[in-house]
Amino acid sequence: MSFPTHRPRRLRTTPAMRRLTAEHRLSAADLILPAFIREGLSEPNPIASMPGVQQHTTETLKRAAAEAVQLGVGGIMLFGVPAERDALGTASLDPEGVLNKAIRDVKAEVGDELVIMSDVCLDEFTDHGHCGVLDAHGYVDNDATLEIYGQMAVAQAEAGAHVLGPSGMMDGQVAVIRQALEDAGHANTAVVAYAAKYASAFYGPFREAVDSQLTGDRRTYQMDAANRREAILEVELDLEEGADMVMVKPAMSYLDILADVAAMSPVPVAAYQISGEYSMIEAAAANGWIDRRAAITESVLGIKRAGANLVLTYWASELAGWLKES
Ligand code: PBG
Image (cartoon, rainbow, N blue to C red):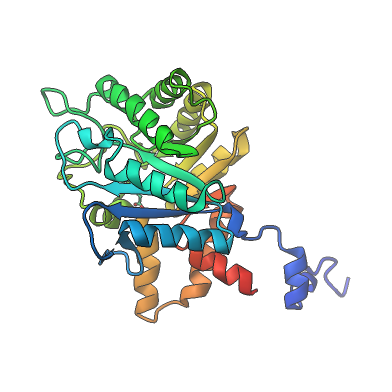
């Protein structure tokens, strides 16, 4: 044989051929924009370790949500930074608290045009920065935390969130939230379970984004980076508890986990391209070491190729703008 029988290069010859035969493509509708709102700001506050991302005021948050709608982005995930914190994270339950108010404001701005998601977790609201309340030994008390999560979930559903995102990795959190929602008459409020969420160094910049008070780490509740099999258990538990969607987080160092979950999940799978993943690419691009737009596009495409149906990314709106151009 004087020539190769298969020439995969034939399908790479022109941009049109590559476009036609692409196995995966990015779509704005699959993207979710995480956004931070901080109580008491009169001007948006740039987050130094996440160039291009800011803590919003009510006005700039509403504008960002409206822009996301214009660009065809699928959803927004809201995080609140309160002015006052305490040991129990009480501000999370206040209907006028920063996050609940932000949900209401965004809902008033965009209605059902954008899927409004919100973070059900105490870390932004506690003065010790943990995702739950502490027992006498400083250990995060699983079941005492669940009670608060149930109430938080109802407050967020009442404010108008379409989807709740419990991110604290407490055992049984999806079941408790589901039950609380049903009891309060919010049968149609969905839950995206942060099913496989790992204790990651790549959350670093997020700590600045929410002015986190945490001094230790979250290794007694978030997953160990060494574990792969365990992610399946976490997903199965959340599915049994009624999760409508499941999430893998972080994304880029956990593409194997994402592929495993995508292979077994009967519900949509989300992946969260987290703060540190964002900042690494921004930093390398700012140094001229990589082509920013190409690197961003490739990183999100890699997450989709691994099996994510939905991607939370701080570039959601910018990417959606590029997709509109092309
Ligand atoms: C917890 C939460 C965190 C993130 C989202 N939800 C922080 C953590 O677990 O330490 C991180 C997101 C990011 O890094 O972009 N409420």
